[in-house]
Image (cartoon, rainbow, N blue to C red; front, side, top):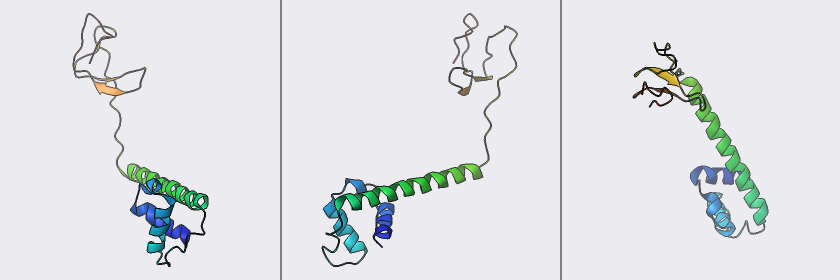
Length: 120
């Protein structure tokens, strides 16, 4: 029952670890409709370990939901690099390119024919 109460508090308050153990006990007592100071016998370490376990479980659920949402959405393909220009290694303005060191994709907005490595 205590774990379920902590789970509910974690869902309600993402900053729960910032509370003191005393405030956490009072909040759980209120949530679980227990007598005042009924959770004073629960050790601080035990209570906070339950809190951190439930926070990790909630974070895993959030990541799982984000992954499902990403899997459900249509995948956007990265732009493909365009055919090489007449000048070997010189990018063409408006063409799709891949930055090899980082793997990032983009579109050439400015190109300097004198310096093929300098393009934006």
